[in-house]
Length: 203
Image 1 (spheres, rainbow, N blue to C red):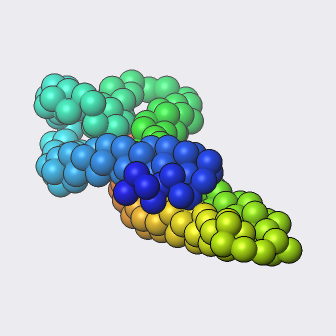
Image 2 (image 1 turned 180 degrees about the vertical axis):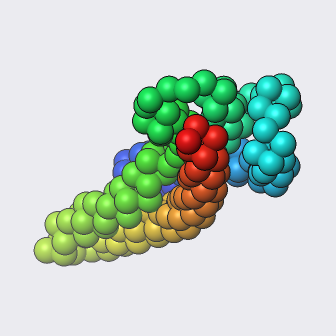
């Protein structure tokens, strides 16, 4: 494996770094969304019960158990402000929601960047490898043949490596983006539900 990387030329270094970053992000986000999925059903059920029973104070205490969860943080702010009569309730909640939603999208821009740049690094390696190959075409002998083969090998290895990093990166980026969008839609639904309840109580 080390020999393969060394044959790929200097551009294998940023490709390898990109692959390590991609793997780290994929693992971190996988654990993160798995934790969210485990409690999302429970949070939605508690939220619905709180609206029906109007027991906002009790619900805040229960939701604090999930203080590191962005969904729980938004619900807590909703229930806190549901007890008060403020004019800019909607704007306040949208600001809080926007802040918490950023947690869902953490590292996703980096993963997207890796998925875009890795193939380009591979293509650049292909270009440099082919330049090296063509530079020895005018030469003859065994040494030139070896240099030609080395240039072609570098071109193929960097291309394959760049694609090997980019393909899983873009797949997991789409998976995580869909998960984040699903949670955002859920948050928007419950925000609108509480806002409607809040409007009814203040008429």
